[in-house]
Length: 277
Image 1 (cartoon, rainbow, N blue to C red):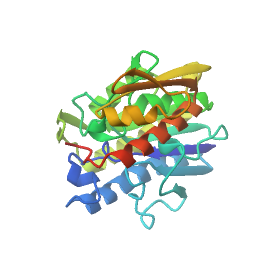
Image 2: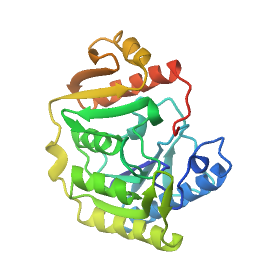
Image 3: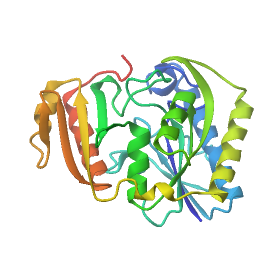
Image 4: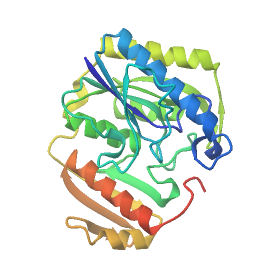
């Protein structure tokens, strides 16, 4: 059994503030250790469930957050950037399941460090007519590749977002959002044990019902904070304007996900703003 772990940072146990997850933050080094330990819990669960290969994609920010020397020795690590497939780099149909560790809710929700890929630079996103963020877009893309997402960890808002997207996914709330930069935390040992247990359970009862969710052509629409970003993206073939700050494109997933990665790299080149203003 081949298992793929996409690891973000905002939904990691104990982390609540930009200082915890940004390289310039005073608590970032501690956050890296916390992230590594949550991922290790997921790896242990995968191995217990019978995984023969576990690949971990460091999917947050600089994508060099996980501490390789502390990562479970059975895990293969995908590290650094750029990555054409962003949070799903290296995922293909040879994998049996995806685990989402440390994920957060989309922009506009009152979840811990909520945003969609680029802090406040992306105001809203829709897949078809459905509001979407990192959770929904990863789920739909993995499904298009033929691999089910079976487990997610994050705060309770992220869990609710995943459950709304696909109620068959096992979710672990490792913190309960009080506001965008505040949360109530369970004991760390309890949270990590819950991750490990949920992984074992989800992999032994994995459900493939959602795999047909986005077959064929889909439309992705993104509303940017900056009209300059939207205007520049119109130079990419297939990108059309909805209004001065909103663009969209249509195509099959995962190609549409890959195209969105190009959009974020263009936006990064045009803007230089902190992600949690």
